[in-house]
Length: 248
Image (cartoon, rainbow, N blue to C red; front, top):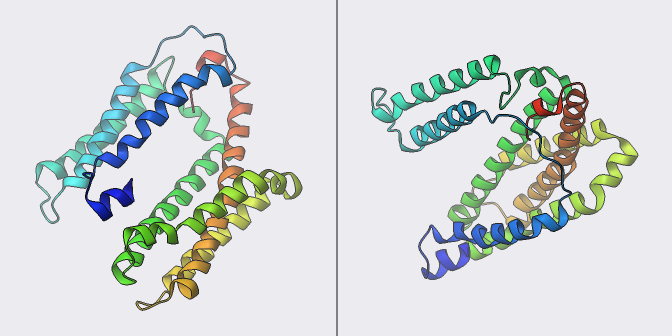
């Protein structure tokens, strides 16, 4: 749909986002057939926590997207202060609430804290890689939206093959820590290679090797990091009443 929207102008820019609507409906309809039923646990929903953290994130994103450089007193810039205040209020509510949305004590678990940090850093590197790589392919190498998308296909296929076919076997053979370390080193190497790509570079020589190395690093590190955090979360949750275990 992105190709149709950019190359043909048949659709306006919001239309590609709607592709998730029918997919979501299909998943919602099939979920009861594949998800094991778990008896509901009585408890109260932390509505104030959900409201404050959602308002904080929405306000921060809006302020960052719409702010004007150099105008520190603009309404958009002042909204950043409101976002910080809402986040602080959310944290206070999590401390005093009996059934909090995010029990802060779980963040003290070493593997969970490190896993969250690594996942944040990995996601920041990966999203930036995709964003700037698209700009380089289209604005510097002159590729169309279609060929730019096709140029990213080897990365996607590498991630699919490694995550689906190899990740579990590699973790079982070498362990979680080794896979995380190798994956992060591969991602760092990919970013280093991309930092040396010349303005008039070649896709095959300069872009493809670095992109495949980055995809390999992402695929090797993502699942082990998630496994490490979930294992720590499960061990912490086993020591607490089930109604106190947050979702996620």
